[in-house]
Amino acid sequence: MRHILSTFVFLSSLFLTFQTFAKEDAVNIFAFSRDVPKTQITHESGKKIRLSDFKGQFVVAMFWSRTCGPCVKELEDLNTFYKAALKENIRLVLISPKKEWKNTDEQRRFLTKYHATDLESYTDDKGNLAADFGIFTTPHTVLINEDAQEIGRIKGTAKWADKRVLKYIKSLKKDS
Image (cartoon, rainbow, N blue to C red; front, side):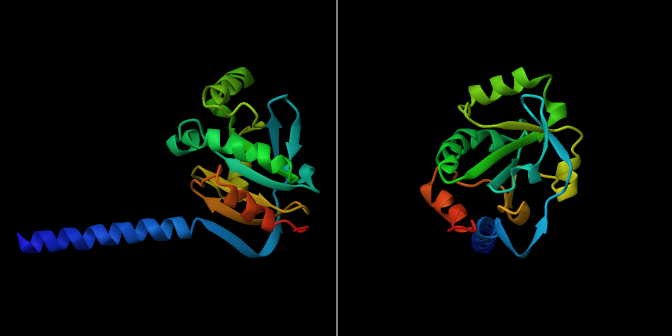
């Protein structure tokens, strides 16, 4: 019995340690920036754009899926972040696979249902942009500087409504 208990304690501590590292390793800021892919995505209005079209703004490109529980759970916090970020010339771009939606109305209803009414919504028509970034899981956030270069990533969820997240992302901007 004592052996079983000590094994359980060891495995539990190993699991908790892994969770802590996973959270710490979620943010990866690159030593060198790189150009973003030229692949187009579609705004909910139907307009095709490239992430490089936002040159001059710091962009937080959030790849998400409606079938991803953590993605859906953080939509309301993302909406809070979006409203505060706009005041800092930081743009949040929400990108989901087009195949998940019958049309943009369905996508907008979904965002409204989860209290994300202010978010700008884009679709990755064939999943090419996600593939060009090497993104195969969600949520996954790409941080893009004002020169339209990728400078880092956040893998997994973040506490978007926490003012410290905005402060940190603001610190990555060139004009801070």
